[in-house]
Amino acid sequence: MVELNGKVVIITGGAMGMGAATAELMAQAGGKIVIADFNEELGRQQTQKIIDAGGTAAFINTDVSNPKNVEAMVQFAVDTYGRLDGAVNNAARTPDSKPLADMDDEEFDALIGVDLKGVALCMKYELRQMMKQNTGGSIVNISSVSGIRPQPANPIYVAAKFGVNGLTKQAAMDYSCNGIRINAVAPGAIDTPMLRGALQQFGFDPEAYAKQLSMLGRFAQADEVAQANLWLISDLASYITGAIITVDGGYTAM
Image 1 (cartoon, rainbow, N blue to C red):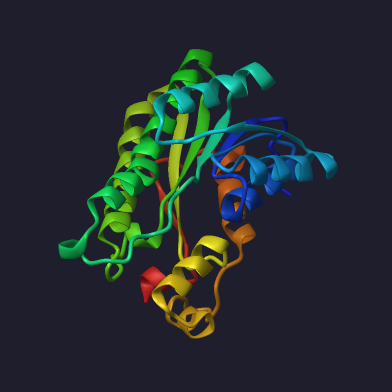
Image 2 (image 1 turned 45 degrees about the vertical axis):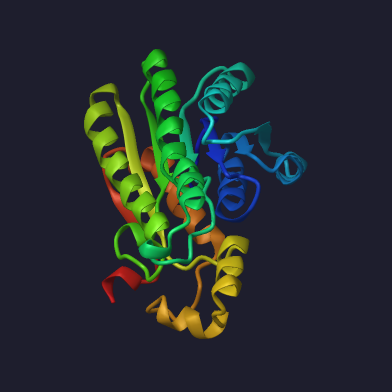
């Protein structure tokens, strides 16, 4: 079992799916967790679930596209636990479903606002706090295989995730001198409510589609991504920064 030994970790989009699995796993590993999510009901339920299981967790309602919300999120972590050691910037919107010529302008602003600007804002305030502490830290941005290999009719989501990869590498370069490691995890087809909803939206059969998206012929489970997140936040990944780690069953190598 990877140990976090009391590290304070923010997880955005932690109310469900990969974020919830990551929050649970990191709490089990001894982390002190802040779940940040716009869905207050589910966020509080997930927080209580961790507490009931013997873990340490707190919740703050957060819209990651809002700078004041993000600044308050980081301050909440510090007010609650005294510091910030790590963050998993996981919050995201469902991918778009139209080619570029048919793009919806409002959808562009909303999706980029969460999936790209939101990651940038989270890093901005997380980095400021970590530099203030002068004790290093680790940040994991949740990208996607769509940030490596474009998908049909997802121009906004693809652009956002390519951007996340770029932000990750740039920030890793700029803040390595502060002892802050910054990496991205790029999941493939993960069995989450967001994926199931997207497949339904596009009219795809989940079982047939899984075989097209993985050498292993199945969707991943959320905790398989959570394991990668946990390792990168932990001291076991002490020499890893600027990396984009795929958790995709070999999809990007196909």
